[in-house]
Length: 160
Image (tube, rainbow, N blue to C red):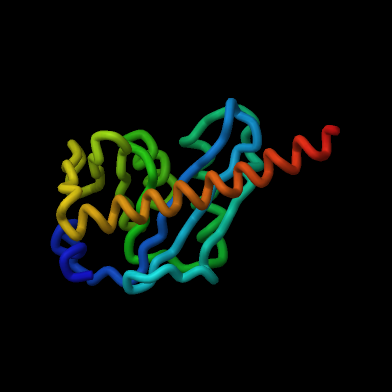
């Protein structure tokens, strides 16, 4: 937690991290996920899955805005919110949660974006902080994909 706090340049220690991802296939069954880690461990009671309601065409920015707004309507903010995506996804979420500490992690380049590094910061995949952030993002991604597959399977079954 202290390494992550230092790496991100935060004043307060990091105990809770929520990570969000969006999943869809050609705008079909657009879903989102949120996983929470508490002191480095999955807090599965705080994992959430969302069927996107506000849009029907692929728009990751709007979908992220919807799920973070729904997530924190009744739940308190974590110490850090990690978004699967780049600058655009980060900007979209910051618009609806300006009071939160939000970072985003772009795939492939493993580039981290946030208030303290608007031009991005490459993660070292060998470093404990880099490994942790990538693992969180990947966990949220798999959680979203599994929900998306479940919804697609149900949709196909209902159309038979």
